[in-house]
Length: 413
Image 1: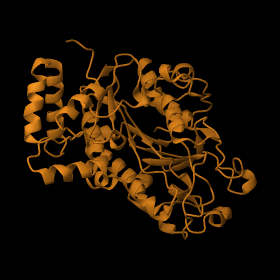
Image 2 (image 1 turned 45 degrees about the vertical axis):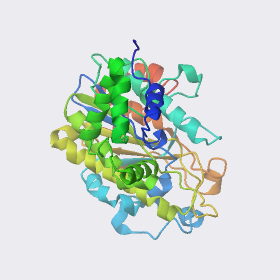
Image 3 (image 1 turned 45 degrees about the horizontal axis):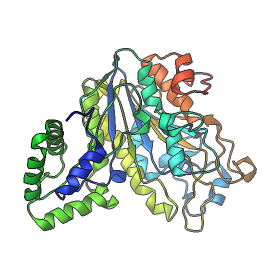
Image 4 (image 1 turned 180 degrees about the vertical axis):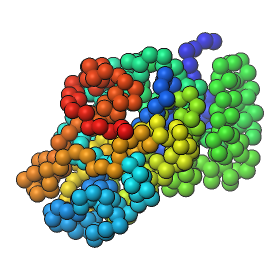
């Protein structure tokens, strides 16, 4: 039997025959890599769920902020101020040394071209597609892959993905391989023996299984075979639970693995961090995802090492922001304008970029959301141009169709 690659549906179907349980794909964090002929590195982090930029970067200088957010604005804290009356959320305070070192910046009041419907699915698709509209689903590819198509000498990095579909961001004709840190699937010893017998006549599936076992053992996860039924059940519960995923530190494993590849031949990595849909009790629910974001950035720096970090740019972006006013559940709802986080040793940081129109109701988008004054794609395009030298015409025509890059914001040192 011949086939062009491992089918996720095929693997899951065969796994079901032997009681194999793969972590539910919505909880997985795929990581994609690509090699490029440059010493510069680019890391793209998608913050899925709609990060509240006003909670991350708090405009304490605007009197309307405290009025719109009586429980979320929090008391002004000089130790958390970064620039011109802006302060950061306490959960990302560990990033302050990067700010002072010029390795961290924020971009305010940015968005994709997506407007009005405020759907996570469409918003994320548009963010990853990098286009002005979604177009036909069957023809969609991602802006990161189109960027690779415009570069010479790009190769796929040796990696492996199982249990999660490729990110739209990296999907396309350019070679990109994937790996997932939480593909630790569990089965009984009897199931493992049966699976081995099933695969005897299919060498490609047997090879794929061997690779999965190898990656599972190398990434710090649990053993692939559980012999005790209670251990099997506990492991499955941990994979299915968002709290269990956080306890397992998947985001740190993602960052460690990404840094390891970027120290070698890989030059581009993309992955996502979830948990940003803060409709209720945002004062508490915002803390964990912000901590994970800060830990991810710091883990990247620590594991990349000085030389590689100095050639690295990190772009963290989300599908949309959130409402200016907090809701009756002391959270925020889906909005429009949001914020972007930039980090890395290559950055000319220590700046709050972008132009905010203020939070008075008349200045808001539809009198409820932060008014977007710039396109998040523009900052990504300039980071790419400064890192890899792609021409503005290629970026505006092919990578981000319809984008006007305008003046260089001078993101990189």
